Image (cartoon, rainbow, N blue to C red):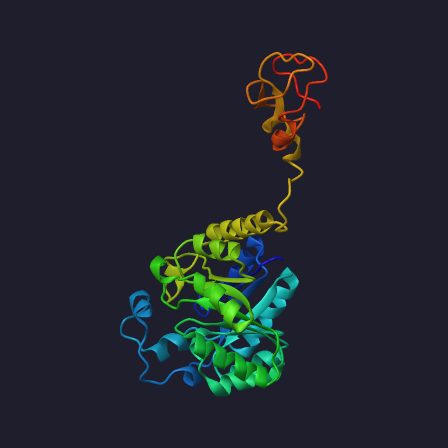
Length: 331
């Protein structure tokens, strides 16, 4: 099954719609399935006293509050419409994560058919209830959460009418230390909660999302930017265009390599069977009427004769003809 790859533009447009369009262009060139932004009204998302995360402090103006930072990163409704039209013309799926109840209404009104729930909203009951009532496809990120909290969120969504839910294992540290990734948790979620699973990645580089696909992720989400050195909270933990292209290429290769799961010779290797396998042959010259023993038989390439798996069937039989050394045995 093809992995649904989401290129997370997030707020890496820095509040500039032209940068947002350039990000869409990069996503298209990278051949991802969707490009995702974030929809919020800063005043409805954070209080005036809310502190910035450590990674945000190190990548933005130290003197500003989280509210002030987010205010500069908002996209208004007209910008959403313009970007959705741009995506439609470029033949790529537009997605955006709502961060408040009004933003859910806005995106639903604009016809969004997949709702991405961010990790921070997994314990937000009114938020979950509202999205659940829309009965759309849901992708749920699970950073900072216990399995019980994920189960509770799923139950709220289902109770309110949403059935199609994919749960993304996630760690919200930007960037995520490799020893904190815990990819096996994705399989635990799949097994214990009986849901489709994927992975939202905040590590540096591309190896972890590729590994997640090899482990069965059906959705991959990864931040990207035009330039890691741009000012803003998420650029440094994001992929640059060439890295995003390489990640997509590698994921598609992994999907192809996973195959059907049926263990059988592939078309490309069938020609090697007789070359690499062996047959039962005469270890030395054998006269007609002689008894086949371990002293006068051995196994050598090619494998176009009697299989060595018939060894016990051949031992003790009488040769019905003369055999030269290395000649394939027949009984």
